[in-house]
Length: 246
Image 1 (cartoon, one colour):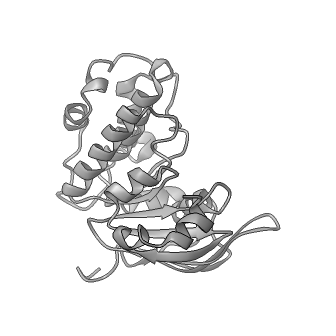
Image 2 (cartoon, helix red, strand yellow; image 1 turned 135 degrees about the vertical axis):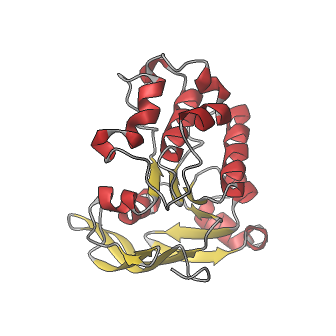
Image 3 (cartoon, helix red, strand yellow; image 1 turned 90 degrees about the vertical axis):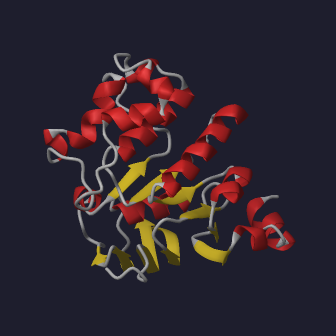
């Protein structure tokens, strides 16, 4: 992959749940070291898009290229091994495992026995993740299910970082969090970008997305209806009102 090539390129994907036609020809490109936000109302296809990219709900038509690899049809674990990690909606941490055990899942034998990522990119390990998330450092022996919602979200992000990914997919990371914790999530995403990771962000919190994104897409009924820099979107009153309810 040349430096000028997109990290992720999605071209005309069509994704279904059974006979339900959800994504109806979606395109999206993102570069290395950027945060791209996908915005839209509930039920418009945002999570389906994340699932399509991660290989969990593959599109029936169209192409997805990640690091110059055409990944439609790849098993999710194969896509992860290429350098992609998911912070799923609802956190999905392992409630019966400790914080430490949750963080070590990407480095376990179950996950291939190592943190994935390009050679020499293993910045993230248990020590550096706990330094980034001091709340978790105080609770390494505590069960994941006993953490607060905010702590569980930190754990989900920390777990993704342990894989040393090039691209992190974040699905509604601010969901259910207080304004103080949303601000902390914003700062964490900025820090992750500064350290060279790219983030594809699906988010209902318009303020958060606009604060961190380098580029924004708006999706309605499975189609992209707008894309551009966040400062330009801020001036699109019709798009904001009609498609985002703002």
